[in-house]
Structures are given as structure tokens and as C-alpha cells.
Image (cartoon, rainbow, N blue to C red):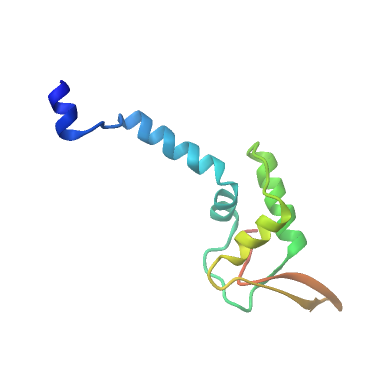
Length: 106
């Protein structure tokens, strides 16, 4: 047994590998929300207001019993997505802050 350890090193049991992976995924609240709530194919013409995104994210966190990211981290994670740009545009005659390249699932 000792010689096998020296030869192959420590091998993590499959249960440990799976549990570790699940733990890491459970701590990444942003990715969980994004995977469940984003429309997969968006263009830069698609726009969602900051308030709708924040509302959706906080509701998802409440449903999944996880602590949401703070506002700055949330905004940074949104902008780190490919083609996602933060800006303001006129919606129904009112300037609205939000992000292009993002749509929420209905």
C-alpha cells in the first residue's frame, strides 16, 4: 500500500471530487443565475435595464437560499460577459441604465 502511494500519489475518491465540484458551483451564485435566467443568444441590440437584472438576480438568490453579490461585483461580472456593455438609453421616453447584449428568460 505504501509503495502504491509513492508510485501514484494520493488519489481523491470520486465522492470527494463530486462534492468539491458541487460546493464550488454552489458558491458561484452569479453563474447559477446566468445559466438559468439568461437567453443564450443575444445581440448587442438586446437591452435589459439594470433594475430588472438586479431584481431577477436577487429573486434567484432568495429562491436558492444564497447570498447575492454586492452591486459593484454584480456589475463587474455582468460586464465580463462577451458582448455585454453597460450604458443608458431612452426607454418609453425615460433614460434607463442597463446592459446591451443581455436578455432575461421570460
